[in-house]
Length: 305
Image (cartoon, rainbow, N blue to C red):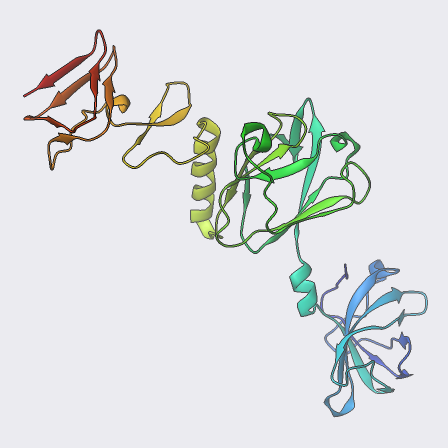
């Protein structure tokens, strides 16, 4: 990937299409810094008559030279320099497309540790490119995967691959997974293809800015880390119920501790159980649809007014 430096603009007396020997910095600008010695940089050349060139080149500080490999130009090829050109260091459209966020992944104590935190809940923004570094030797034998189901294939889910590109062999030098999610991507989970219980959740959301972003992240991540959510949607009309220990599940209205009453029609349309420790109140008359069962467990109470 090309390297950059701020406000670099220099003259060159080089002619032809070969390596550029850099001259002095233009007024108000700086020369190429020595810290870029040996690195590939993105250069923009402007020559007489409006001719221009965008290239990559390796900077050699000892001779203040830049090699040239064409990216694009006004002529479709390397400029035949006049000896009176100006050279900049600047990002191109390709560089902006290649920008990505690095995420480091290792395995420790039987868990995926992401950027230093085991089983961390991640937040990814659609259209942003993320690069998961999976080169650590500890990952060998623990393939890092994505799924729309918690714990993936260990929980009847499948591997999610849309917008995901794997490079190299996980657990070896240079291996990474590049992720660029689409705008309608659902919430995801990361997991180990070989072992259950090693992964965590991934929140997928559009970018939020300012103080709203901080509040959004803090509240949502707190909720996800506090509760175990259902892995699939419930039926129409069902409600979320907690078991008191942080696990949420979908249940019918009566099972959630509410009176199983359709206020508009006073008709019970789904099977309902009032548990042994639950009470229900119905403002009658109550009509129970054909085939529907209302069960009051021993110890439960159902009062019809």
